[in-house]
Length: 355
Figure 1: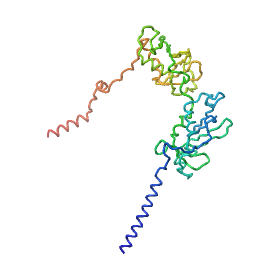
Figure 2: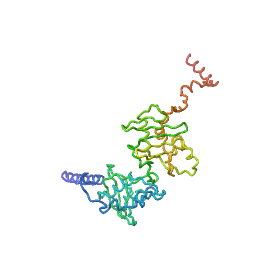
Figure 3: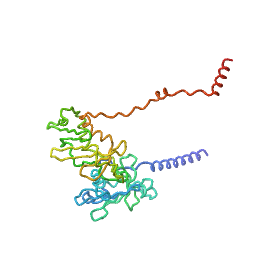
Figure 4: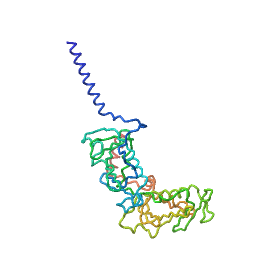
């Protein structure tokens, strides 16, 4: 009888161990090749020069990026405005070098879990100049290590875990892939003159061959080298907060800019920006001189651009009115008179305590 019990217990132990092992294996992340190892490409014949158009659908937004006749990447639905060239390059590099990854699921019902279904996944379609499909896949959520991403090829049920951080790469707020740097053609190192014109006057600064900046107008004014470096760099690298697409264009105040900032290169190329009306207390409308597109950027960026100008002309910052402190407000308040009922209650309490 005792031997029989031991056998039953051993069988139960084996069964429980098997269940525990299967549960562990199902939750364990799939094994992947070492980071340095080579793996077959997912799109072996695809190269960046073959790509003429990229379509991206994500969370209700739809975007299309294409090459124009000169080979420049543009956003056709936004008047062929230049696309973010660096972002497009990152996408193409990722697609053309993507490995086949590790298959983590073949179950169609689990596509939602990995966010590679048509509703949650980011759908990417890559076309050549003849509109022939070169690649078509869905980008899902990141892997457990956050350095990998779940993807699914269109028409397949296999969910693959590839060694790339793709989740952020194919997503943009509102699906807007336009370039947000205004002066992409400006070389900061070649800029040798900086001028600001405003209602209070104008100020000009110049860089010597030795690389030292000085004030030319008004003459003799001291110049903080850090202020002018930040201003010149800020203009050359200025990235806008967004595109002004308001129907009421009068508030842009394009005809009466508050300041016009110009940087000149050593080969006499000018990069001019008009700082116009206020979009809000924290933002200004801006426009590149000679271009139609209107943007908006932060007040912080604008202040950085005009700081040397303000110091040169002795324009003091307007201080915001001080708000009264809580203690000051309390001091100014009169203490409300106690009601008759409260006075009676106090007297009663005092009387009780004396007794």
